[in-house]
Image (cartoon, rainbow, N blue to C red):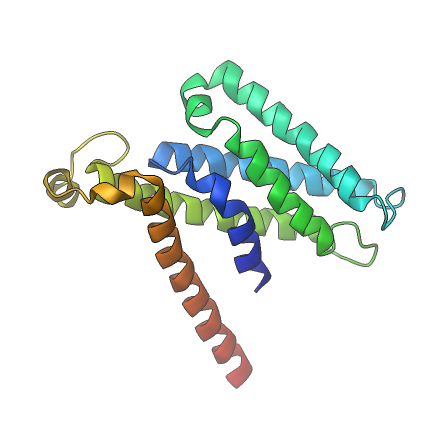
Length: 193
């Protein structure tokens, strides 16, 4: 349940950056970087963070790492920066605030950095799937080129709506429904044992 909430919370700004696979990967790497370092920092600061100021501190810490990622991306990976731009910060802050609300600063929470990594990795995988599907089905290429026969078919039979914002929501909804179905099935299998 929490995985799906995290996915939806960060999904809207992330969808703007998933028009192709490279942009989706760039966004995913940024999310992993920001979530893990922000969570680690919040974990180290937990004895100074009170219930009243945890959202403020989380916002400042997450914004710091989002800014670092944006500056490094702009300086060294300009083409990626042009695609993901401001969306990386918006997505990261949304997800990190949710994480703070669900225990990043709780003193009894264990392995929170590992959980942040796993959440952000799951989010990255979903972005990769959404970006790949939008690029193959909507643009008709994969990684910017047509080389495989299945992809070549889609180059001639593009689903144009997938190139636009509604297409991102369509693909993301389908992927999220599949993830929810798999999680529900695996949850039932665990309960049955």
